[in-house]
Image (cartoon, chains in turn blue, green):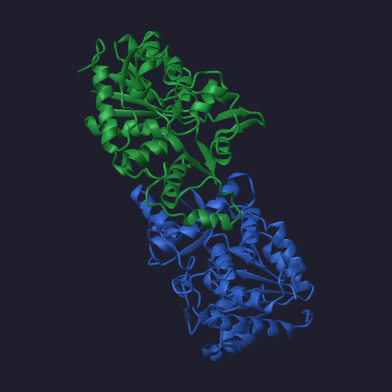
Length: 318
Length: 318
């Protein structure tokens, strides 16, 4: 069963890890948000791609919640001595990823080719595909004006309220050929439990992306989204506050409402059972289950349950 | 006393370290060879500049003979896992230098401004000036054809015989304004005991550089060279074999002959005392002393002796 997962950082990456564990090698493609990408110290840093990469290669630091486990900080400390800003922490092994990727980009490689080469070197069985090869940096408007996403997310620790979100340059972006091919071959599409506004939102905002999803659905491929909001709060990150400050409901139903036009089914957590009828009222079929993924086994369990749910849709490949 | 030293890697860097130790802060400028500069993993690496930088900031690894003492190799090992070539070893703290410098260059900084910012951050009292801001990569012709310098020097460990040397793009290069100003303000110019062909040679080959030296000499500034060949052999590196394969004499006299047009005085090691008359016969005044610089005290001692020797020339500032 060919599965395409849409993912931002941690939540989507965890579900992708579960999917990789239960699918045959090569059957999972992850389309990853690149709106968070930034340049630090002249190097191209891709927080969402790398969260998925490190998760799928078994190197993610689950305790810290980002980066590589067992990481060291020699380069960052030396950069501090050289007067470089250090609010965006990068570990030594993480730096190697950014160095190798940026070197390929400077040589003229596309973003997709650059990251695939690194994925190949690490030997993961999954392809992690940037949603687009061009730069589409996410920016958020706060009461202090527009901020680059990482300035808001890391430097200002998500303290300001978000009044508006934009993806700079998105009007000229296109899904890559690899993304289009993966969606054309998909039997199931799963939108992971990532922030609907700044993780999944940019993916769906790439011109042509929703058409690719519509084409898949037209051949009876189910598109299933998993809520990243549980009991009204985001498990990680500012999705709950963002939904509220932008006038949406911070709930699983509020997430489902973001995706109504694009999806067939919606997965919400058991603690949100009482919301199930109102999600169903959006015209969506629902699965209510434990979505927390507390450990590796939990990731695989949720992946199996979501795939089983997808299998109940008309036309889904068995 | 304002001193300008011309330096390549280790030998010139050691003498620069000695000069820094005995001069007033701010009185030493080092003009450094950039022909060895290379791009590794997309980062601009400057072996000669960095040898001087690490030497003058007390961080050079004297035992290993390159890089920073106490260095770790996490990034390099991680790059190896990512399939990057690893024959050009770079330590973690060294990587930070290359990352910070390359970031500034990508932002549009000149090479000189980029390295001065790093020197300022490290608080060294000396200015280390690239001989030119444009790229002039040294290439050597071997029996297998033309090789980039680091391919010859590091990857092939200087095994091939060098048949010819060229500095690509040198015809369009210029000394920087900072180099011209340093030479215009100099009371003494010292050519360090670096390889005359591929360390000092590129500096003197920058169009206009020998004119700047001639202008300095016209106002009675002595130019003194120190031999990097002692007892017929190079203390480090392939200078001896290069001199021989290119048809020169591998001796202190052979080095002096390279510089005859540019210098007033020549310093040769005590083991080469018997060569002193033939060096003098080139029209040069000579100093014979211990040039080995076995430790930090030895660097300062040689610096003092060379400066005293310079002081004996007509017109040299006391």
